[in-house]
Length: 174
Image (cartoon, rainbow, N blue to C red; front, side):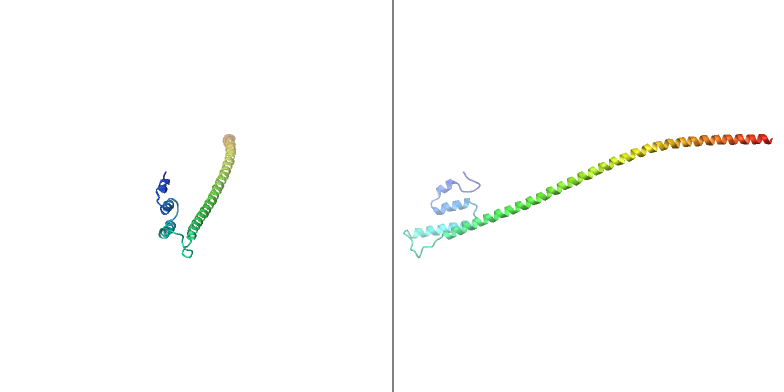
């Protein structure tokens, strides 16, 4: 089964030698091109040496290539750790930003609710004042109407008395 363009086990079985097998493995892994070329060159140089000298290598001629492999693996491990640290730092920053935004929104909601409660209290108080003022206006309007009627009655009575007085005064003078 092939995994996103990587090597399958069938490709490994068809590899003729170690160089081809490592080449297939390198292509399947997430190694960079530079690392892959280092490993391939290392294996090919070993194959060339083995093809030329079938016997055991001379002590002074043999060079250990395991240092290159360890160095590549160490670099890969360091890269992976730096990527992990970077991902963790990004996640921490994003989580912190989320928490701040969450707290900010909660505070805005709480403040908005407080303002709504204050507005409702103000509306209720204004409604009570309005009702009281309307009641007082009704009482005052009734009192004013009664006073105006009383004034009209008094004015009418005064005019009647004044006419009676004039008529009496005139009748006495005659």
